[in-house]
Length: 439
Image 1 (cartoon, rainbow, N blue to C red):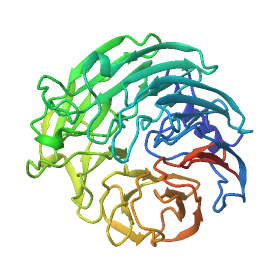
Image 2 (spheres, rainbow, N blue to C red; image 1 turned 90 degrees about the vertical axis):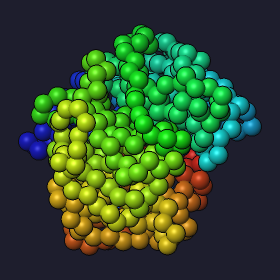
Image 3 (tube, helix red, strand yellow; image 1 turned 30 degrees about the vertical axis):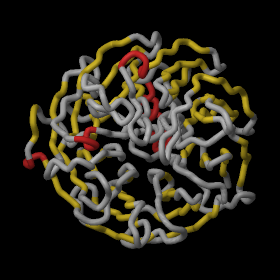
Image 4 (cartoon, rainbow, N blue to C red; image 1 turned 135 degrees about the horizontal axis):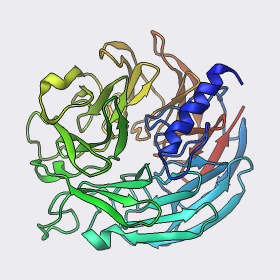
């Protein structure tokens, strides 16, 4: 093993040790990958393919979902609805052969939401367990053989968690705990007469399912701006570990151990009643990146650390070009990639110097009409994007110019899940199929 390869293995194992059981180099245990930033250290990845070329296997799925697959210890875990029923499933496939190892019905919900469904949250896994969250509020832990270890219903315990477009926040697994975000307005879309519902971050013991702490997330945001569909992420700086959340007009950093809020930054220039948030925060190179809601309203970079209410002195830079509404910013090898997936003239991908915010290049992804809701992922000096119309685009990462390497029609739309990368292969979830792509 070369020194470079050894360092990659060590880095991933160190991150994995913070989980209940260590993950391995090459795994994709969370919807944003092994480093929680959308990137992987995998090499020799496919640059082009089709629905028949470079397909290691494909498997049928029982229904649609926006959840990104996670891959751990040679297994692929996916969440799914079921066509013509209210059932919500967890499924497991062998990562090498595509054989379905098991499927388990974990919940059911007849709740209907626009542009979404009740199986939108991505699972998260370690070498021992996999955890599923659904828009019905069901939260469940299974071992890798499908045995249910514990389950509970957050909706039943704390009131309706479904917002106008459902619930899509994915759990974060860190240091033996699951972190769940419920960022809802006090009068929710489906409970307009309620006024006592709080928005909160919940820490759950991953082995037992019991609460460790529950912290209300206070906001002065108004109306729909209180809603956030984003996911909590772990940010490790030189001082401490922080749980990052963006939404309801603020970025906040919370102590994973106690639930105490370290700091908050208010990104809303005015109290807009329709600034619901969808994209999650990005981070890398000592900075935290947040996109203001609705796309095209600006992106900011915050310096890590701090205490209390942060002012503009903690803003390293801002970018006022095309910015995401749904897609989470990607940090990869010193660059920040932001995808505005709903521009009327086409989806626009921009590469920024992550340290300074300087634009390096920008280009239109072309192809079919937007939107592009899946977040960009990266590895092997390639960027992987996929549109809701099932059109995948591979681009060269870095450099000084926008360069498309290939364009692939996956045919089976709609697609909202991000492309996962593990063990030298790509895992792509379309409307009805799960693909494994390999050279």
